[in-house]
Image (cartoon, rainbow, N blue to C red; front, top):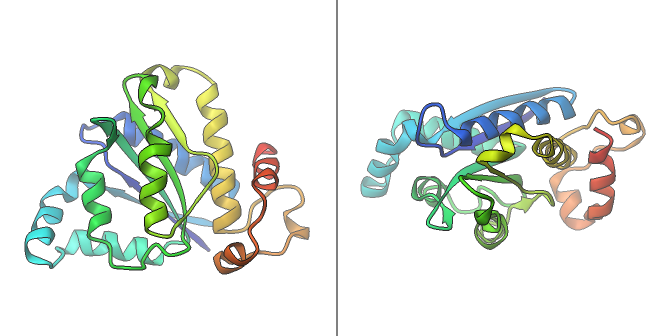
Length: 205
């Protein structure tokens, strides 16, 4: 069973950030044969995150969330854009992760904002952050402005990104999956699959 954790940093309820996170989770479930998805909603962990920064000890809910990330085969990380970057709440969660916890872990990065002017946040903020943690960021990041939720292009990007995460995190249900040996994260790091091949497999979904 492949395990995927979805970390969402939306502040409102409901939020466009959680909506995008749910779409990415559903597409990843479609791309994998067997998957267990755990949602980590940072809004409800805000007080425990602050306490952890001040005391060094996580509360029970935060401890469970950190353990879920530790055990996950893959991660979906979604943040709203604040001041042209990820939100402070989003960054705080990853600040309290233990050293090395994301080493080699596949991560799909995504962000939401009111306008498309903030779309570069994926490349100038999120990718460098997870590269610092030595995670394996999938080729396709997903940015969604408010208007994107009414179109079809967002669904295409969501499916492509989810397919890439599925390829790295577990066994995909693509037509040729049975003839393709499962590769561990260590295998991918030692002999990475070319991005062109990942995109070709994902486009079949």
